[in-house]
Length: 379
Image (cartoon, rainbow, N blue to C red; front, side, top):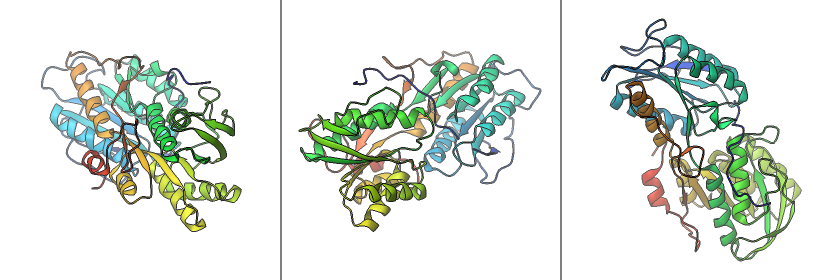
C-alpha cells in the first residue's frame, strides 16, 4: 500500500547511562554532576508552578549519547537558548544507543530538582512511565527528534518530518537512476526493534522511490522485487536489509554482508551519515560503485556529499529543535502560551532540506555550499 499519512511510531531505543549537569555557558565531557549558579535545587519550588518574569528556569535536556555530532549540536542549541532565556540547563545522556534506564534516572533527578521542563530524545516505551510521572508533577515535556509511542506521551514533539526526509532521498535516487534497474541495499539502524525514526526514514525512502511500502510501520514488509515508479520508473530488487546501528563500524560490517549477497548493488539507503560513511568503506574495499543516500545534514555529512561519498543527504536542524524547546519551556514557566503542532501533523515540524550537488528535476534540493552554511557539527 502507499503511505497516506504519517503516524508516529515507537522511538529509537538506547543502553547504560551517564548524566552531566551544566550551566548555560559551560560543560564537562565526563559523567558527573555540577549545577549552574542559581539552578533550582531539589526540594525547592514545585515543578510546574509559574516562574516570575526574569526568574531563572530549570530545564533538563536528555539525549541519546554524548558523542554523536547530532546530539552535540542539540546541546549547543540548548545552551545558546538557555543563555538567551535565563535557563539553568541540565544535560543528560546515555553511554550508547539503547540506554532507557539512564533516561529514567535523569527524569527522576529532574523531578527531584524541581525543574520546570524536560526536553528528551526518547529511548523507548520503557521511558514513558517516568515521563508520565514528570508531567503529573507539573513539568512540561517536549520530545526532540524522536517521537514517543504514543505521540501524546509527551506534551508536544519538535522534530524533523522523518518520513519526508527519507522520501526526498528516494525521489532523488529514482530520478538519478534514469530508468536503470535499482539493486538496493537497505541499512537501517535496527532490524530487531520497531523505532520511529528508523521506520519513517526507511519507508519514506521506499515511498519516494515509488515502491509499495507494504505494511505501514513494519520494515521489511515491502516486496523484495518489483517495479519502482519514481523518476522514469524501472525494475528493483532489494538485496538486503542489514542493521548498522547508526554507526560507521557496524555499518561497514552490515554493508560487507550485503556485498557478499550481490556485487550488483547500485543503490544504498542509510539511516544516517555515519552509516553512509561505513557503507562507503565496504563498497570501496569491494570495488563496487553505488550511490548512497542518507539523512542528517551535519557538516561532516555535507562534506561527504561534496566529496562524492554520498550522493545526497536530507538535512535536519537539531540546533533549532533544542533552541525552540528551551525557549518554549521558559515561556510556559513564565505564564506564556504553549506551542502547537504543525498543520496536518501531530508534531511541530522543524524542517528538512535535501542536500546534493546533482539536482534532479522535480525534487527540491539545495547544494553543498548552501548545506554547509546551514549545517551543524564541526565546520
